Image (cartoon, rainbow, N blue to C red; front, side):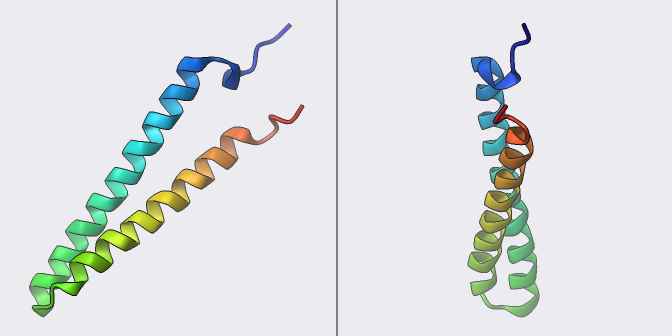
Length: 75
């Protein structure tokens, strides 16, 4: 009898923690790029745009990770 990975609470907690870090890193990269472009153009709107773009990429990548982990788990 084999036990699935998703039945173990520590694996699920690690996955959730890793997704949180992944989203945070994407937001920080978006902030950094927005600050760079903002300094270059003189407009502060690029910072907000960078953060929101980073958030969108972070959420999208977290969704892809969840889909990859849940692939084949309906057995």
